[in-house]
Image (cartoon, rainbow, N blue to C red; front, side):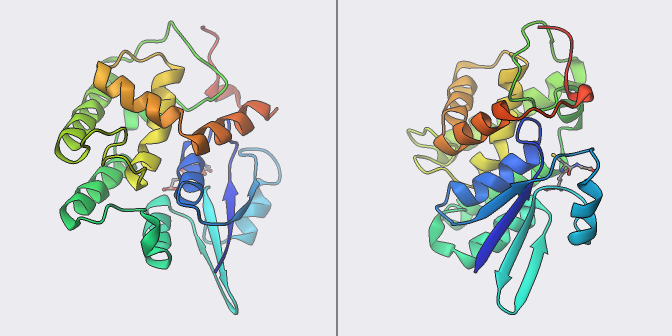
Amino acid sequence: MRYHLIMGNQAYSSWSLRGWLLLKAFGIEFDYEVVPLYVPGYERFLADNYPANTVPALQAFDDPEKSTIWDSLAMAEFLHEQHPEAGIWPTDPHARAAARSLCAEMHSSYMALRSTMPMNVRRVYQSIRPDAVTRRDVDRIEDLWSWAASRWGGAGPYLFGENFCAVDAFYAPVASRFHTYSVPLKPTSQRYADALLNYPAVVEFYEAGMRESWVLDFNEFDQE
Ligand SMILES: N[C@@H](CCC(=O)N[C@@H](CS)C(=O)NCC(=O)O)C(=O)O
């Protein structure tokens, strides 16, 4: 199987970071391209990859078959089926079910956090504080992190122990938002967020985002 990952701007695209990590963190070989969001040319990506209408989109080639997988949860499951030994999900079935629940909740929730604190790897704001609804999202995420770490995490540093798994890929962009908006966290949450941001494949994605020159005004704020 050969993989080609299509991502949006690495400076801004939180879902692209998840797609990238689902391959990179598990030693799965792939090549990739960045299709900048909301500029002319994006339509070509849509036309070429129907019915994908968002990034990341993973093209999987298994001659003569080719599929495009355009949803990060579906990517996690497809890649796990292809590479069961890669450690995308925890091996214990109860831990795996918990990990899948955590990813599914990330996938379907936290709309306030996602809309008021967009990912932006190039900025750190000190003066933006979460509003009450966003703070509820942050509290829920901190509760989930602490529940998973105490039940499954052992000595860490990741939510299910010493190995980075899909859950960590799904919450890495959340750690990025917490960092960008200087969201105050409990010490244990902060330690986990720091471990995610220092993870080599996250650092590599960040560095690429920093080098980008595309600017999306609606993801930038005047404050520092
Ligand atoms: N459900 C998708 C969400 C992907 C998504 O919303 N991606 C954003 C970029 S982070 C996007 O492509 N936005 C472009 C658009 O909505 O036109 C997934 O799980 O990957």
